Image 1 (cartoon, rainbow, N blue to C red):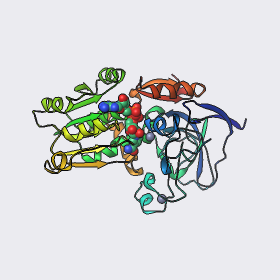
Image 2: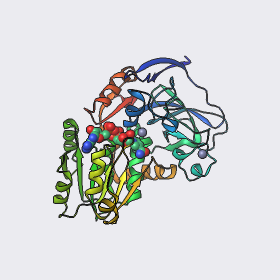
Image 3: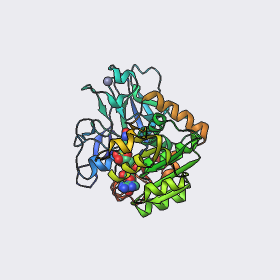
Image 4: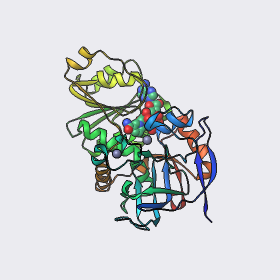
Length: 353
Ligand SMILES: NC(=O)c1ccc[n+]([C@@H]2O[C@H](COP(=O)([O-])OP(=O)(O)OC[C@H]3O[C@@H](n4cnc5c(N)ncnc54)[C@H](O)[C@@H]3O)[C@@H](O)[C@H]2O)c1
Ligand SMILES: [Zn+2]
Ligand SMILES: [Zn+2]
């Protein structure tokens, strides 16, 4: 048995299951038995419907998809220094060159070397029975966390934690989150753990408003609309939220994040693509506001996030509403594309519960 099944995304809103050779780990590499592989909004936006992405977001046709992988090391190649067979691991989903300044800061995501390859984009990702990874891209998964907790750390939760650290969340803050897909829900979960006492969410899809309410992560969930800025001000003593987080990539929601932030407020954009028009003087300059952009996270912060999830007793898998076996990966992607769900996972072995 040296063959395995893996899912590729042809770019016409379908998923193809193909047979691949089970890779053999070379020097400094490990072979991982996949346990959980969650779907990110970026997979839908850049790959599933159409191969839209360029450069670091360019999907190489025929690559196994999935950039939120988590599993157990089945075999460690020669020269591995820290990780060994049996270890439970999260794969930081970009393999940077390891040597440039961005990589030395831990931001493999920002590496521009031709050696940079992201799992599920330019090298094979997690939607298969096995995944070949470089040891340097691994983060230990503590026993307290499940593989489906870990998978979401690989992109979504890592991204959110980085963005929230950039704007700094504490008990003083009212936090506004726009776009309540998995990333927006993760933002609420982490903002609460970091001390936020008032969390307001805005979403356009009815199903997702319902999920956000059921998960009990927000103090108020608003339907997206032209009154949003006034509504947020009304809920925050007339002044607006100290911190705002866009997880929608929608132009109007981004403007709401800017305008519903109070004076001296900090805004972070996580949602990717699209555009945003605002008037610099009234919208940011005169109110002393700051807008941050944030792309994924670095390796050390991902390790710290994992440690804190355990300390806080948080389980990212609570955001998963649907689990599918690899054979039904097509249903998993179609569901995520419909938006009628929370987080969607493709799972293996004990995670198939
Ligand atoms: N910055 C990064 O490093 C990074 C990493 C991962 C994902 N992302 C991006 O984050 C975004 C969210 O990811 P996700 O997996 O939750 O995707 P998603 O597409 O499931 O979620 C986006 C949500 O925004 C909602 N939305 C659309 N218009 C809105 C509006 N006007 N007001 C309020 N909500 C609105 C959608 O209905 C949807 O529920 C995506 O754009 C994704 O590409 C960025
Ligand atoms: Zn992602
Ligand atoms: Zn590099």
